[in-house]
Image 1 (spheres, rainbow, N blue to C red):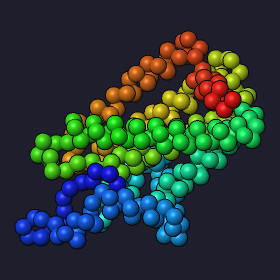
Image 2: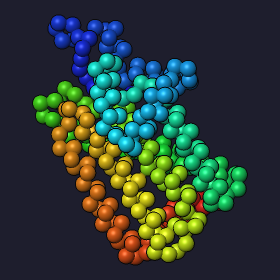
Image 3: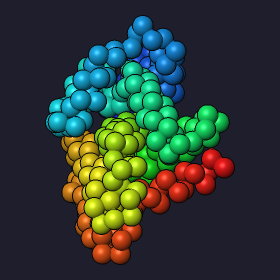
Image 4: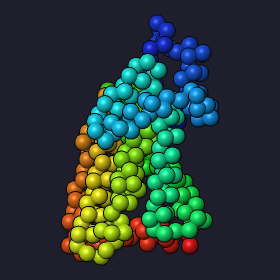
Amino acid sequence: MLPSTSVNSSMHGNGVLSSRDAARHTAGAKRYKYLRRLFRFRQMDFEFAAWQMLYLFTSPQRVYRNFHYRKQTKDQWARDDPAFLVLLSIWLCVSTIGFGFVLDMGFFETIKLLLWVVFIDCVGVGLLISTLMWFIANKYLVKRQSRDYDVEWGYAFDVHLNAFYPLLVILHFIQLFFINHVILTDTFIGYLVGNTLWLIAVGYYIYVTFLGYSALPFLKNTVILLYPFAPLILLYGLSLALGWNFTHTLCSFYKYRVK
């Protein structure tokens, strides 16, 4: 998918790819293959995608180990199967409808919320973060002796999707069971529970993102991707001291957007 890792196995003895292999390994060819499979559900491995979703909670390192296998067998780090994206979209739709129901939104308001969450929160913000991380990784994190390699943009987007999934489940699913009767009660317990869920969700996002880039052997100093934990914990403590309820702010914003 966009810029891809240069290198590899199908080289001739002189180290140059044949014209046929070069065409097959271009970013455009990989992107075309991925988008073509997006409309062929029978070719998608939903069972494996579900396995990845489970292990993103229990052992995300195992998910990225599989990315290593893909690089060895298919010469690309990014997913070539859109099954994960399809399942994530279904989760996104179901959880957002649940969010609309809990917030007592009408049918058209819920549809507006769904469109906002899909195209702005997930896709729009995802494209922005992925592009920023792709630029930072290639500009500052590639080892000097590995300048012939670069981070695929498609892999950067996959890392975002991997990190976004636990955040989605925590904030758009688990949190639903506590919103009306606990989190939005304007009590210390309310914003303690709500803000703690936000801390866990955003912490998961940071950690899974770190694992994604640290899994690439040609990157260095990826530990800096864990630095956002410091301001996150500081903001969490400050929010409890000030009585700032993150979930209440989110719900107010959502209601404002669907008016």
